Every structure is written in C-alpha cells, then in structure tokens.
Image (cartoon, rainbow, N blue to C red; front, side, top):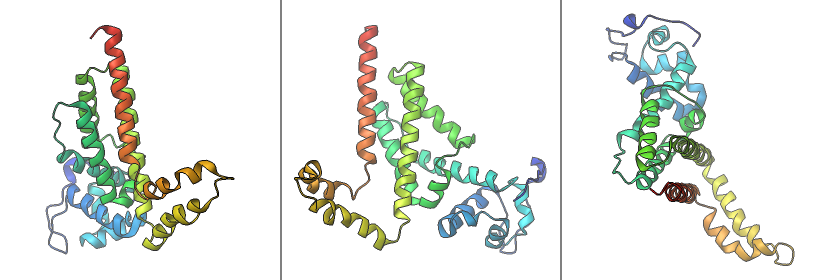
Length: 239
C-alpha cells in the first residue's frame, strides 16, 4: 500500500464483496494475520489481501493508509487476544507470570506475525490497555513510579523477545530443529573433560534443558529480582 488517506466517515464499505462479506477493519486484520502465517511478510500486499477478501484492493485504503499501518493493527490484535483471556487476581507476581506466559503462548500460536511485530510500538487500543494494566499491577504492588516503569520495560521486552526468538525457532523445518537439538548430545555431550571440563560436567543437563524454551526460567528470575527490589524498597521506607 502507498500513502493514501480516506476520511474516517467514508471508510466503512456498506456493500458486500464478491464473496458476500462486508469489509471491516476487524475482518481485514484477521485475514492479514492468517495470510502472514501462511506466506510471511509478503502477505501484506494490497493484491494478495484483496484477492483473499474478494474485494477491490483499492477498497483497503478505506481502513488502512499503507501496509505498515496494517502491520501495526495486526501486532495490536495479538496483544488484544492475550488480554482477553487474562484476569488479574491482585497477586502482582502471579498476575505478571500469568500474563507473560500468555504473551509467550500467543506468539507461538502466530509465530510469523510475532516475529514481524515484536519490535513495533502500535500506539493502538490494545497496546495502551496493556501498558495501563501492567503499570497498574506494579504501582498497586507498591513499586515507586520509576521502578514500576523499569520493571514494566524489562517484563514486556523479555516476553516479546522470547516470543520472537522461540517463534523463529518453530519456523525451522522439523528436521533442522531435531538436528540442532541433537547437537547438544552428540557434539557437546562428547567433549572431553580435560579440554572442556565445565561443559563435560554439565553435558547431561544441557542436553535435557536446551531443547526447551528458557522463557519460564527467565521470567521467574525477573520476578524474583523484582520481588527482592520491592522488599528492599519497603525496608528502606519502613513500609
């Protein structure tokens, strides 16, 4: 898509497309998300989207100014899907743990879109809701504002980074993934103790652990560090 602006009042199409559906922003985003998972970034073209929707490609400009605008909407949709199933309980660490794992699972459910959107700032409804919700959890837990923002930043970037990392791994052919996993046993597991004593000592643990995502462990380390920081702050203030 190129830069074209259609006034908001004129955006919604009232007549059905060739396939009998009425276009909407939600329908276009859902279709784009499906096509991204099937075809990657190349799916975000006016021609391909128009064909999938049974619509004139130019009609998409009624909803999105260009493909980057659509990509931001897709990234925001992934955030929204995570938030819809998340219910804070009031236990700040448990709530962040639950949200982080849901974010990671959401990325793995849509790996190609997750890789494309992990580094983007959408400024859209769901992202704003996520920022507000996470900061509320942290501030109500007692973190001062600078600490709340610092932990928010680390928490979100960690979840997005691991989501993109693990999603990229799932995109590899199964044979390639299996071969890489086997390297920990066949290569690292056979290194001699006299030249690589630390690898040799931990080889069986490496073979068992490296085949899985380290996100759960990394998330726990982050939450433990945040809890320690909160305890320290309370001790300083007598709270």
